[in-house]
Length: 326
Image 1 (cartoon, helix red, strand yellow):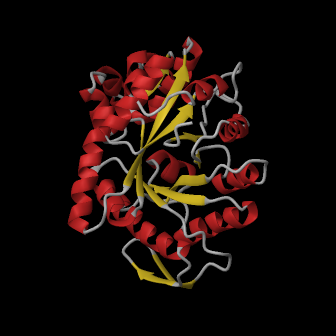
Image 2 (cartoon, one colour; image 1 turned 180 degrees about the horizontal axis):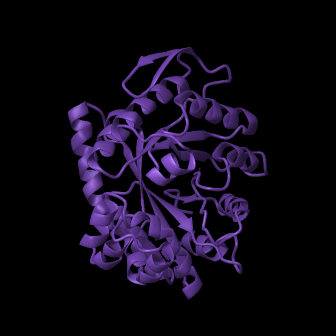
């Protein structure tokens, strides 16, 4: 098995949320490097990670990206330490800024100075995760006197980055940056930017992970799931420009016009999914993984599309275990 391939749990809108447990078990049995446990509209990430970690298996876990506008640095550190203590697994932490819909509309919180908030949260979480008592006064976060009572996980810290300010925050604070739903060309740009910003900060360039949505021999139902998943990104700053530059300006225009999500999903061409993912037979999947590696990805993280016939993404994950260092 190629140890640079990992798996992220998918949360497809039209699928049973319990698919996440099936994907986790499959990734563990097939020997993938680690499992990323994110958070959207279903499971609490720490609860799900604990359920996975107390089941048979040993795959390491990376929890997140967790929205810094929703969770405080202390709750993030406590959550990661809790999972590590309860499961005995190696645990990493990933931080992000999420979206206005999630932060403001779902949670009733304010998105504020997102890049600064991301960096300040990362600095505090780093201290907690290393076992330090942290005193920090920032413009978006502050904490005084708390230290983890559980064993500190002393884990790798990842920052989800896309725009230049978030990439700068990652370069200044993180061991790793992670990208999602990007073209190989965008990976190359971000890898170069990370190197530049890290050099300015006098730090080594963080490793770069890329989440890649994937399906072997995709059916129309698979593409329908992916289309629905792409809708919320069409208007997102940065993503809209990337999709337009890749030749998909029409669905972006529709999204900015306020079109209904159902109409937007219907307008997303399969080519857009192909541009930011890996879909096809074994050779096509292998070439797409290679393209992301050539662009600068140190770790490719597979986000398998699950279906009623394959709720664990087994076919895709099995085929990708055959993909060597190409």
